Image (tube, rainbow, N blue to C red):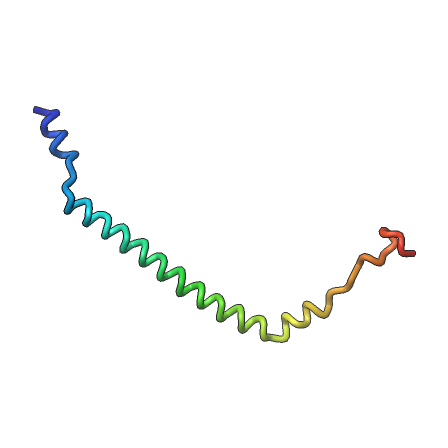
Length: 74
């Protein structure tokens, strides 16, 4: 009797499986849409930051340190 009830409880119909798969696919689709929207927002923010003067100042302040005494260029 118990094994019969257990075997009936474990049987999943095709419609139940289809509904579960649709729900999981919908959740993943929502996550993918959120990720794409965030990616475009970050690209726009990165573009704005690259156009500012603060980034250009950092690049110009870099100096080449390979001509020091550690490399034999006295």
